[in-house]
Length: 62
Image 1 (cartoon, one colour):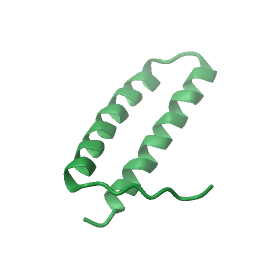
Image 2 (tube, helix red, strand yellow; image 1 turned 60 degrees about the horizontal axis):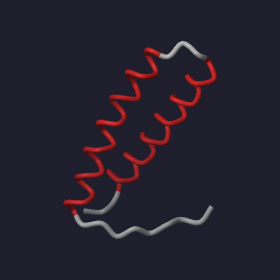
Image 3 (tube, rainbow, N blue to C red; image 1 turned 120 degrees about the horizontal axis):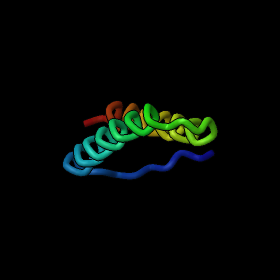
Image 4 (cartoon, one colour; image 1 turned 180 degrees about the vertical axis):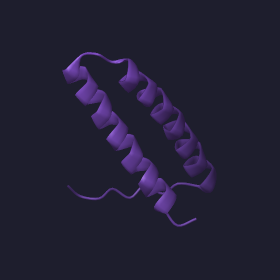
């Protein structure tokens, strides 16, 4: 898959990081409450995607 370049201002990057951190907290709560194995896998995958996005945003040059 090709990399996508998305220029962000520092304010936009900080907003996205905060938004993703909130989504991650909610996803962890949802994972804890989920009993259906297939949906739990979906939630865990979503958590992995959020973590990867946060890693990339925090690694971006400021």
